[in-house]
Length: 301
Image 1 (tube, rainbow, N blue to C red):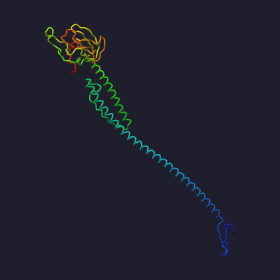
Image 2: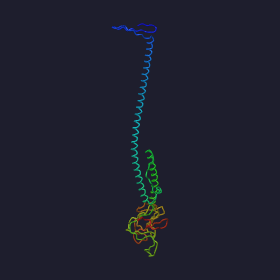
Image 3: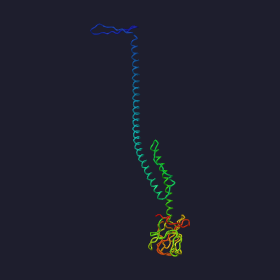
Image 4: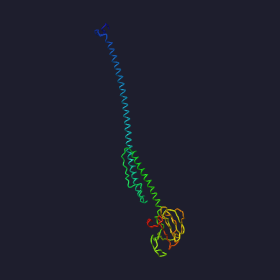
């Protein structure tokens, strides 16, 4: 290999052929080395950039895959919630129907009690449409509506029960039951007196039966008299505390004393013929505000 200032000569000596000479400029090796270095650096940078890009792509893909998994899990949860809401809604509709049926049953029973007690409860205020209609978005809001309806019904029933209890308590003090079994032999009003044969006003009714027949209190009250009372014989008078008083006369035996409280239907005496009497019977009077009234106008037949 020979060199001069401008060229580099390379001699190739084969075994069987003539020597060959190749001449290249002196700057070529340096240029080639520079190019090779540049290519090497560029290739290294490219590979590095490619690897970083690939790593970023893999990272991004993994993040998106994780996001997809999260979305799928969220979707499954929402589907399960939807299934649960549908089941809850079906259960709510069933409960709503049961509530409506129970409210209707309570209303029917309430009307029967009103009729039985003889009252028109102010708690009802006429017919009420209790059909439950919803225009809300969640079952919890629907349950709140049902709860409010039931709360209103509870308050209404509390007032109604107070009305019924008061009415039944009042009815206990109304002398509306027959005080003894037997035959009515004399009614309220003008009649011929069996002793004087003159027309006199009969203040009560006479009920005839055998001696010892039970005499019952026609209503709840307090005994204000129990003893002999002239022509009435053995007599009981009961004050019922509501303007009503009842009188039971001609008894054979008295079973209660003055001041004793008695219940409606309680046996208070035995039928007899004491006092001014023509035979065994009960003379029964009802007084309203201290005035005698026809017992048959009060007694329930």
